[in-house]
Image (cartoon, rainbow, N blue to C red; front, side, top):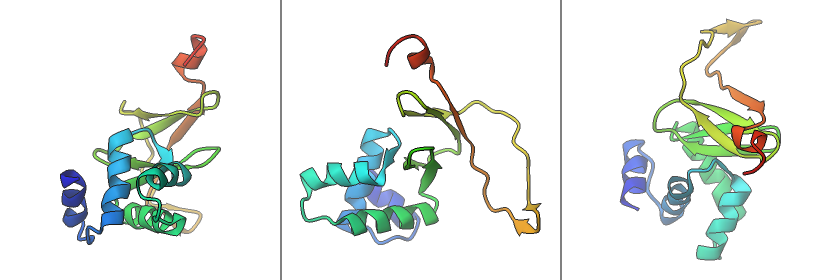
Length: 135
């Protein structure tokens, strides 16, 4: 709980109980959960929390750079951004893996008249666990 409060305070976000609880779930599980996954976990612990609160809080934390939105073929997942990295999504088991390896990423500032603010890579394929016959 202390780490969540520190993270929120550092970003000048008021640490409400709901925000702390949502961030704690993400920090605890570290497995790139969807908003619905986070909501289901919180529902067990705090039955009064609303889906809207979860979605609004995730949006706030993403806009403030605390969370990264990881866009996969089946959903948007959330990841705490301690250090910038890319992601690998397995089409078979649906897991998302952090990729910390350095690889060449183009530095695009403008494209077709649009200003580029962020480039996010989510590499899609089959993970080594599934290739070796199991999870």
